[in-house]
Length: 379
Ligand SMILES: Cc1cc2nc3c(=O)[nH]c(=O)nc-3n(C[C@H](O)[C@H](O)[C@H](O)COP(=O)(O)OP(=O)(O)OC[C@H]3O[C@@H](n4cnc5c(N)ncnc54)[C@H](O)[C@@H]3O)c2cc1C
Image 1: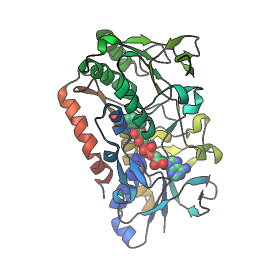
Image 2 (image 1 turned 90 degrees about the vertical axis):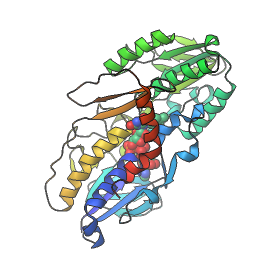
Image 3 (image 1 turned 90 degrees about the horizontal axis):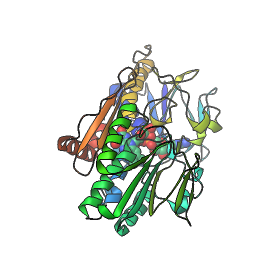
Image 4 (image 1 turned 135 degrees about the vertical axis):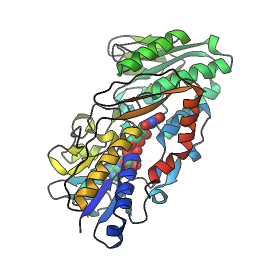
């Protein structure tokens, strides 16, 4: 009986597992296939909702669901942490001491902020990429009466447009509160433009100009001095701030490196089309954990999950894999509190940024409330 093991019950892991389970319902019921999901959290967390928490536009209770409630009934769920992946023996060792053997493995372990990689940031700055961080920032915004906001973006990070979204939402939030004239906004970015994707960078720079937001390029976040309330770059520039919101650089899970599978940053070397881990046709990588030059986004995890699930269905039933990933990315982009746009691109087609509309904003709001169905659609 072929055994599929999925590590990570986030967006990518849930989608792969549910998609395969639905297609192989009969095989699962007859014991001809086994699917196990292993995750160190038994609660699924809808991370895109964190953008709204500082502005009091979404509550934490709206963002979570028990993992079990989102999984197909035929899937076994193990709440434990993968501590070591022995790819030669096709075996995973967990924190509690259990071992899980597999024939096919999916690594969907995501990515996380590395706050400590920027000295002083934990003490002197804010971020909204974790629930604790978003709630602390909500408190800071409740106290904010004007002054200089510095949004300092580190790379790499997931959701490539979230720092821009926060900045545009903050701009409008201060206008609505009547404190925009007492507020200065500075946006820093590590390279020579406002965003790694050129079309987004050009569009954002125009928006910054129109809204009176200062753009500082070539600003690689080096350290924060909480006493002086100053953020400094590797390039030797610095800004005093009243409120610092940073996007800390991200890293992949340490189990990759510790198992001899990960590269620098714990990212997994992944084939850009088959999504196989390098030299391992029995291991697939989905979502943020890849080293691919595509955005780390839930939509990417979704598109990759479809490809990997279809190939796993083939492999688990003795057929060769047949699907390839084309680099597809889709991101909504809030351009304030009531308008949004979106970008869509793939390996061969760069994005175009359309003018923001209310309709796209409401589409995103609706998706925020129903995305559970997307994870489960396949149950
Ligand atoms: C503020 C914010 C806004 C965002 N907005 C958007 C947006 O608008 N659109 C969009 O598409 N994306 C957005 N994203 C990004 C999106 O949430 C992620 O890209 C997506 O969740 C990645 O899916 P994943 O399956 O790779 O990882 P995750 O969903 O993070 O899941 C990884 C899972 O693996 C588990 N895990 C990790 N290591 C181990 C281990 N060793 N053993 C067991 N379990 C393990 C983790 O606990 C976690 O449950 C946003 C993210 C943030 C933080």
